[in-house]
Length: 498
Image 1 (cartoon, rainbow, N blue to C red):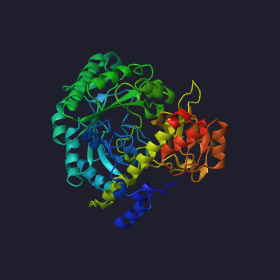
Image 2 (image 1 turned 135 degrees about the vertical axis):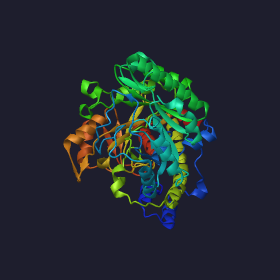
Image 3 (image 1 turned 90 degrees about the vertical axis):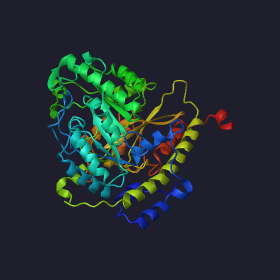
Image 4 (image 1 turned 45 degrees about the vertical axis):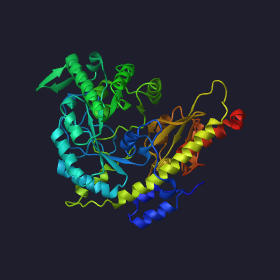
């Protein structure tokens, strides 16, 4: 096992340059020996430069970099049947949810405070809690204030697209090169089942006409953005029985118009949220249904599978939310930005990414030599617990989610995450929470973790899920590849000798 660079410990360290460099020297490579990570061979360098530090646009980047959303845009111009912005729970991860709304000035102060304490921060996004472009003055004012202090941070906007065509030129002028549009339909008849009304041209419009206008504005906005070289991620909410099959058409249409990514998210419809769908009993898709749809779209627009459906005031790595650490009452009136910690963190990450890429490539080579486990062999699903950095570095009992990978002789592929309540609470486990975790891991063959107690290990194995902590603190892909090879237990001698 190679020595480990602990990105987590570096991020939480007091921040002296010497301490970070010492931590870097303990790792398996240095920035001088490994260099910075190269981009994918099939991607233009200018595109890779835009996404390599964006945790939403790059699955690799989400292991290393954090996003921050500031809730400066409360007004919205449409009503969605899956949305209720009045509900808030600090532990709820759901779009449109916030604990406090901010003025642009407050938001800028908060961003500086977060940047000082969260060196992983690379992206500032505005995702409401209403629509960022319907409240466009507050959105752009926030970006202008932040840019004066953090010129290197990426700006990102999320919108329903209704007001988008009116602001594309301003988006391009403000150097905002990442835009997310929520597109749930291209058929207004289906759209009418999702959107009760829109507010457009100074009037409220209902039904199919409303959905038609929204659709036309979304397509026009998407085309205008891609014509200007702005990267677009399309979010779609999968609603069983309404648009689940239709999303295949949506995928084709957004690919045709140049969308960079298509993110299909499961409907969240718990009754306590007070949404229309929640109150009428509309269910969300199962993990298997979501994966099946994503698999059907493998040849369509590129898919994002690592989305966490973040709050509109989320802070931190995807899969975590440190927003409650940075409420206004915990931030001083005067905040001065110190760039050193973020600069040094990036230096460490570049070295770690290069080492990670070598480990990933070695795992791919080893898997290619693995013999097929029978003519009807299917890929294996393996779940892992991680705190970031692309390693198995989290105790099973501390996990609030499990990242799920698919593995076979063709390689290791990230396919999604399964959210579950903490098993540990004050150092003790609760049986009902472990039941929730076992349910969330349906279809998973094995769990790889940094550490696990005897009781949960036994319960998972009784449920048919193998658990291993033999690969603690190793890279995820290497560990999964090694586990799969050991499980299959044979090597294709023809390939090995070729």
